[in-house]
Amino acid sequence: SARTLILAFETSCDETSVAVVENGTKILSNIVATQIESHQRFGGVVPEVASRHHIEWITRCTDQALTEAKVTYHDIAAVAVTYGPGLVGSLLIGVTAAKTIAWAHHLPLVPVNHMTGHLYAARYVGEFMYPQMALLVSGGHTELVYMPQEHQFEIIGETRDDAAGEAYDKIGRVLGVNYPAGKTIDEWAAQGHDTFKFPRAMEKEANYDFSFSGLKSAFINTVHNADQRGEKLNKYDLAASFQQSVVDVLAEKTMRALDRYPVKQLILAGGVAANHGLRSRLDHDMHKYHPDVNMLQAPLKLCGDNAAMIGAAGYMCYQQGDRAGMDLNAEPGLMY
Ligand code: KG4
Ligand code: ZN
Image (cartoon, rainbow, N blue to C red; front, side, top):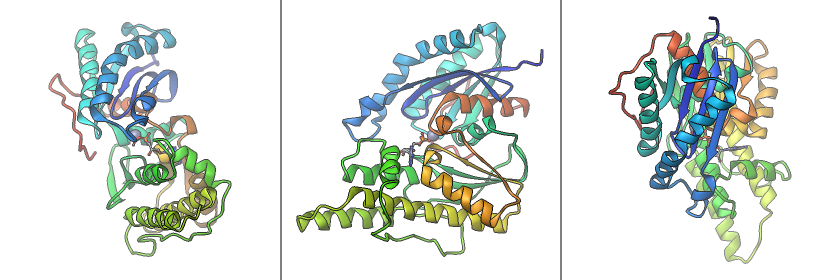
């Protein structure tokens, strides 16, 4: 039939997620069991806690994904799974679940890169066009990826230290915001002004790389120095100033990449792609500097880790002929 269903697994970090996706463009189910609360008291993801949660939840999530999609294993064409990058213990749970199901039901096993998954979250809002550029911003990665054609990835720039999301989480901690802090800082930023003028690292350098550790240090020093003076700084202005620096650098480097690489389309995806400041800034800049380049922003609900994005990427990889055997292993440092 014309209906190709992918059963997809995502367990690279702290979300246990299983989805059923039709033809890479329609979500039949997307179960996401978050473990954020278990990690919050530690101020970040604890790998051992994460893998234990994945083990506890993966079977229930799988059953629920099939039930909600109103399908059985019989209807599934292939099993797709994130095998890297991510936490090795977490990845292994998804990989093992996917292998077991593929073996038991004689289904092809399709290995998917987590970052390709983030990219394909945008596939739910429109068709992909090539050559294509993507700004992928998450808690673990910040990269500009050039794709001359489907399934061909070239990282043209990346962060030299912290990822954008990581920087949000670290400065959030200084302001007493629970992990993950991005969403709250984003909300505070909307209520403040860029009064602090933090550094914009590497903004004018002739490359497509990023650096956020200097910004993070400047932010932390500012807060600590004020603390020592017994002064309380406006948290909304702090958030707005931090966000303005991040967004300025991300947007400027992306525009410069588009000057150098003529593409048909820009994709914005990854956890930090949920950032309202970044989304509207790219809307504005694309309209002004690259009006002929189409832009797709991953839907807000699919920016964070989820299996529906792995199902969309998995469908593409399945059609491209990617297959893994029972020896598929987790690859924590996978690079495409
Ligand atoms: O892609 P993701 O869910 O997990 C990784 O693969 O890393 O990204 C999570 C990151 C966290 O650092 C979180 O603070 C950040 O995305 N994030 C945001 C926003 N929502 C989530 N950062 C900025 N603004 C947001 N609205
Ligand atoms: Zn992610």
